[in-house]
Image 1 (cartoon, rainbow, N blue to C red):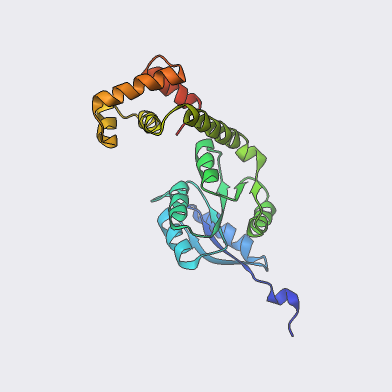
Image 2: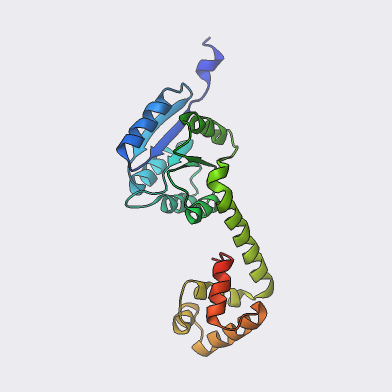
Length: 220
């Protein structure tokens, strides 16, 4: 009978980065690990989603900035398809908004490219085991934004009706009254009435003040 260590399942990994040197370096690094099996490497978002759909790897190492489809788009597609692959973001720079969205979409790990390679390997193992690995320097502000966004959504949801929230979301997207009316299937005059009620409930004196309030609270 072979030793137990040889029977242990290897962690299947797909790596995605648009820089060939980084991609090659990641593959070389991970292939040295006896418990990690790199099954595909991708240079853009379209290739990445195709590879994850085909192979269903345990872990995807994902760069957020890629051509054809960025990392957030890939995450949304994976979420839509309910793919079970756990995702680790490998970030060169910290984009708080992108990280907020990535965390919201269920990313399990975030590692900066500037840290020692050993941390990425440890992160893969932790994420595969069902735990999380977030570099504090990378996600500190992003997590603060996520908390503020959730708090703002709860505050607004507590005082506005469902229809009023739909109007607020449309305003947040920059739609004018006529466009909001067409999208919601209501009269433009009804939109104006909803906005008047929204201004009163949120204690703002007009559309500009409403937009400022939404931006301050990162309401989406």
